[in-house]
Picture (cartoon, rainbow, N blue to C red):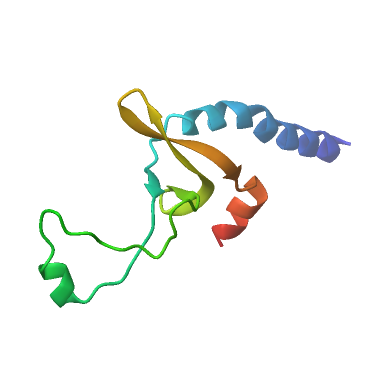
Length: 104
């Protein structure tokens, strides 16, 4: 009987602490990046870049932009203007299950 009581007490303690511990994680800063596209260049071409140079990206105009958090994709969206700054309107958010699977 005493063993059953100890097991129940031990199982309940971590569950009671979980919300408090999770709150500590909410203030961790993360690097958020919006990626327009990528390309590969020879070093020769890279060294010739200057003001006014145009770098062609592999992504087509009008394709959704990728939103990365700490280098991992979490969403896609479209560029918008917010006052005098750029923003992104999310059009597709990767499910939490897919995000967790991507960590492996």
